Length: 460
Image (cartoon, rainbow, N blue to C red; front, side, top):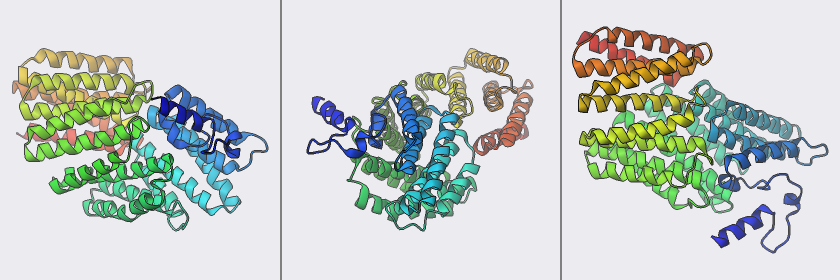
């Protein structure tokens, strides 16, 4: 522990291996001196202060290498957005990255232009992940098309990001062959990143881990669509490789994200094979992923880990028909909801609410206790009353969609339709219209799937 503190204090002060202060670090604002690896060790308050300090450094009159300082500020604001889901932080990061690219282009610094465009793409992809705006993937692809012909140190990163964008867009179009081709396209850039940059610095190591995570996520998405066990095994193997290169004491957030992917892969294998032990391993992995996290350090990572643990407990509940597992899953989703309700437009909020409703419904089915559904219905109706649609249309539509799921569950349990299916269809249709108008494609698809279920139930 003392070695850790001493080493990191040396880095924070900008001291090099021979005990001399770096000239560049001596003139930078903030604690990290531009070392992005140190961002993971900061709590949210320190991270926000670091972002503001980076803005000050970039805006100072007479600032040398202003494009570099702007790019550093963009990276820190992106980390703030990733941890909080704050759209304002995301916009600020995008503005700084765009300014860095424009200035570097004026100064004819081609490597820096490529780095700034990669950062613009990463910010756009993060926005798509957080808010479900698929148009941001197209924007990221357009930006990367300008960087993919570069031959500098960022060329491999640009190629890897382009593969990730292609894969995400292919999944949105339900083109699995194209998505698999995108997963294959990761091979060469990842090898380059691992061979040339993986061991040079903490920032480069994290960058490599993030790109590996993007490929694992794509492989798992394809495996779910195709019900392909082999793809899950590849994803599991790659998650283990990526985790072996990280230390949860030094890279807690990236390590946790990859450990959650390992948990998902184990749960998928357990589901495909009917192996309860694999699902138990997934629950253990998701629990381990929570250990280095704290809601004050990274609220969204903590909420995402709680949601992932809830999903693995759901899988355990389905495998064992144990209402206790579903009750524990509801507890996890409640913890996650406490965080994500602050940012109602997050796609994570919709997924958490949907899975919470499903867990409550399964508890009611297993216990034949309609009081559970009554309490859940009252909670969603209360949320709808407190949050009018005009103030937060996306959050309002999410509540409508999940209230509809509870209506469905009551009909499934009782075998009697007292008009609730019609009410469910109305709620889903309204939610579909809101999501479509806002351009939230993933949520629109969820509402459409619900309408299809209602249609099938009415026809039965």
